Image (cartoon, rainbow, N blue to C red; front, side):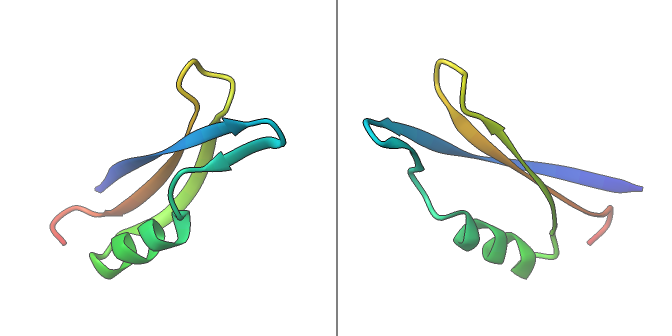
Length: 62
């Protein structure tokens, strides 16, 4: 059986477009060090509070 974890990174709207308020690479490396495997990034850039959800998975019991 697998378990999942979600990490949200806020997106800042700027005149020239959008930018993440944090570095997704640091989050992925930190989670990988804890045994989590990166699955997918889901953008929610049209929401009232835009963000990027990073999805991780691992086997239960790790």
